[in-house]
Length: 351
Image (cartoon, rainbow, N blue to C red; front, side, top):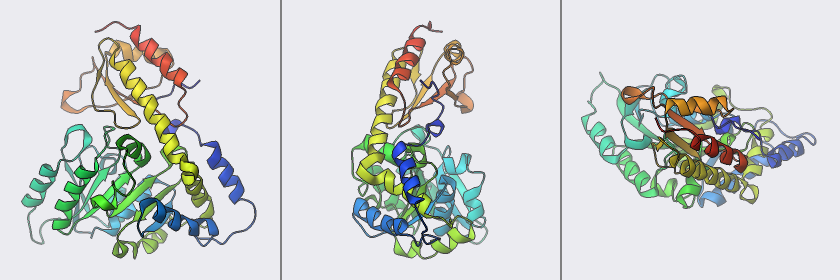
């Protein structure tokens, strides 16, 4: 019974995806995406998103995000993002590198999300002329770094502002399935119908081994991505093994079933910890992540009891006596582990 709640990345691979990789290993197949499995993906995604699109499998979320943003951003461009976003804080300048020097422009936002009025103000105040980076793209995360989800109308409001200035809108969907299940909408409603131009479709955090997909809804942006992926070293020779993971992930709605389980366990964690003495749930729990501010003594006691939680460093309001801890549920989180966590937390006294 695992007690590791630090991330959904600590989870293994879903058995159905392991079986799909084994099945893809049964004989020769054409390389570089010319295999039958990869060719089937575009049709499968088109059906799922209810529109024509282009799909480019890659192995990592960093590659998906960086290549997507490079496709819509010139070297002199500015990419607006949340100040806590993964592309800014956790990708070692990869988006700027792949965009040949474009700049990430961080903006504040409550609960990890950009507000339309904040983006509007930033675009209005962007200085013109050759001496300054020019607005080129907006990127949002689904889920956000605070575990919150952008509803379709929120995405649409940001897209309207971006498109009015000729900017592209990218969605980092590392936890896209968790957001989708939490929102209860269709894949189309939260992406292209709301104005998203490119989606980084995540699978690794939700049961895959190493598989993501760049999903492009604008034909003009897809034209260079094949070249960009190859130039960046992310065109796999044995692409079938990436594609097999994604195909299995989508088959029988496995991706949604996995996300529902993870989200349900996260809700149980939030409800249970929220009732523990001295604990405050810092953000709405829209998916599979819980951010709990708790007494330092409780955090230490849980660690000593074998529970792994992620300390979430916290800016000017960070209080070492009441650290903010992140807990993430995965597709294989054991409900008994959640019960044990809640029981251990409730034994502690309020600070």
